[in-house]
Length: 455
Ligand code: UDX
Ligand code: UDX
Image (cartoon, rainbow, N blue to C red):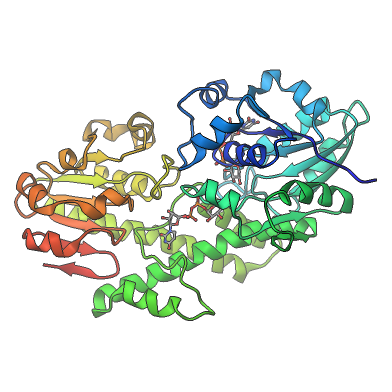
């Protein structure tokens, strides 16, 4: 039977669910899209002028669609939306388990299971259930088992349609994806979902695979991307001690068409909600299937990242402690153009510096200071303050750390800033964005990741 999707419900109004549904509603005016979430404050924000997610271009898409064919409602009112849906996306978080078997590595599927129970309870007729969240391979088995308990005799197909959007470029990635991946067993369900994307994605970019391949591909794609960052960061440390320059090395590597230029930017370490969680999930899966060496291989990608953050923090702490012990931290988000700081390198680096007794002056143009303050270790709460402008944060500091590649940090006027910083202040550039020549002219020393110290 040919199925058509005209009514979509998405559970989870986060960084993935919100923007993804907004773009589907924008591109498919004939499809009615409802996004539901347990978090009522988040739903209220989606219905306000100040959206809970900052993404370039998102405001415009939501303004065009909200109240037309896109609505945000709380899960309390969501039963009818699930009953009416031809397709329900599951886009809730799948954090690393903190207890039970696999704690510290395996993905916690309890929110996904709760969604499956909610769908089983309220669905009506035939429903296509779509995994949008990143799942461990074979998670669909768990979802299917729960759906089979549906009290009203509902029938279901389960598809895997993982999201590849990157934060900060979510709207562009959704509007012009490299590929859309749909994994499933029932051909008609796969094609019904393909038909939704086909409104704006060329058919050759819509990849159809088996369910398990789709689930594993998402984990593997993130692990490969993280592995490239750890590889270039491993090279960055070697550059610093040999006089090679990591950006020059990256350019040479990237011009080999077999390697390609993307994801070769040395940094203070990768962050974000996905890379660490997905690497650990992959490690756990390998261990679960007795694949010890592959598990160790993927674990090493994560370990290198921890090392990169630690050595940067240790260098900055050592410099600051020899002086007045005041450090300015410019950039708290895990990358530019987002207000998200989940797993941001800034968190570990700030905690390390605070543990060393250093006072921190924090600044970021998008991150909510109160929320960031809450993720820092409780006993150090007296050791930091927030400043709106980079110039204010830098005042009186012995070290200036640049941890996010916000455009404004490429244009800082070091002549002016150096006048208010402490004597002997040093810049630690973890993103290779500082205008080091300008800083040196102002008499400052600069340590740049992958280049080393220049005076
Ligand atoms: C999440 C995962 O982190 C990622 O692995 C996956 O690929 C997609 O989903 P994200 O959208 O960034 O990504 O998560 P988050 O911003 O935390 O949003 C999840 C939302 O789901 C939250 O708003 C939360 O309130 C909601 N939720 C969670 C529910 O509505 N119901 C639940 O049972 C659990
Ligand atoms: C990632 C994947 O790119 C995306 O496909 C998936 O759906 C979710 O996870 P995201 O975490 O939003 O997206 O951002 P990404 O651009 O991948 O960056 C991740 C981290 O790696 C950031 O902290 C970034 O600064 C860092 N990074 C990235 C580098 O340090 N160097 C690089 O060259 C690229």
